[in-house]
Amino acid sequence: MCQHVIENPELSGSATLAPTVSVVGSLNADLVVPVDHLPARGETVLANAPGDFALGGKGANQAAAAAAFGAAVAMVGRVGDDDVGRQILADLADRGIDTTNVTVTSGARSGSATIALDPDGENLIIVDPGANSLLTDADVTAAQLDKAAVVLVQLEVPLAAVSAAVRVAAAAQGTRVVLNPAPARPLPAELTGLVDVIVPNQAELARLGGAGEIAGPADAVRIASALPGDADVVVTLGKDGALVVPRYGSPVVIAAPVVDVVDTTGAGDCFCGTLAVSLADGMRLTEAARWSVAAAALSTTARGARGRIPSRDEVEPVARALSERVL
Image 1 (cartoon, rainbow, N blue to C red):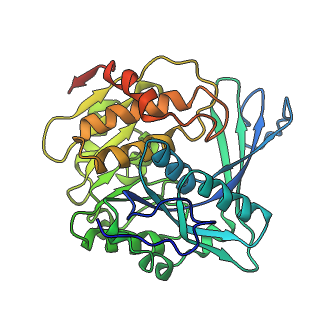
Image 2 (tube, rainbow, N blue to C red):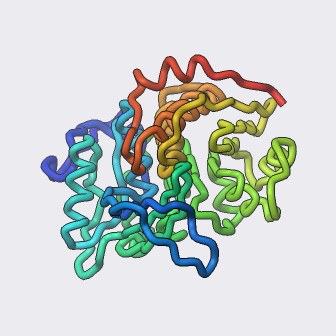
């Protein structure tokens, strides 16, 4: 790959080569509040313990997971010119992530999220985008995404920026595009048509396919196969693992390992970051999904979106033991 020069290594991590994975997405500060149960509509629920401050955002979480799995990672996004923004940059740098293309936005606050967490590890999340909402297509096109093996995008930043990232990456020789369509929203067919791999959960797949609910694996396969374009689809199923729906070939369900779940926040992000690195390493899609299921499951055994981001060595024995079933 071509040499990637970091202009400010103090703020940009320690990477010196072109990234294996470039992540275009959100960077947040999270307030995680433990509750006895998740609130229903109109219900007020008191925390049962003090809340915890942690760093998050889908983009940053996925970048952190990719870096923990051993990839050279570059982040593209925006933070505010505030203490939170400085903490976000310092954390990414500590993880060896290149933040050259994370713009500090004067006069803006950094993004934030409030997360209610119940005793079963399930959550409810409200996001205030802050500076994330100011990411532009110009920011993205200046980031040299064509140097990466995989470009990973989500939907917590403006759709114009996502579209720019997908177009640049799709036009590059040898660069694959992975889209995590979260939070769910309708997407133009011309966007999904340029993507190589789409990674939704079941609710996001239903939204993409214009369906109400997913009525089992066969229904998920039908909806995934009907999406515009030639993308492979990997549907995350939580405690049930993942469903791989290749554009050409048989669908496969990969079972998840049994773990003691503490917090599911960020499990999907861990899955996506691991998948991106595995694909960049040349793994077949089903094998990459197997490793990603294992990583995501292990990530739920600690509190916080980045409470536990497993390394490749931790993931390998778990991944190799997982079963899969061809549909």
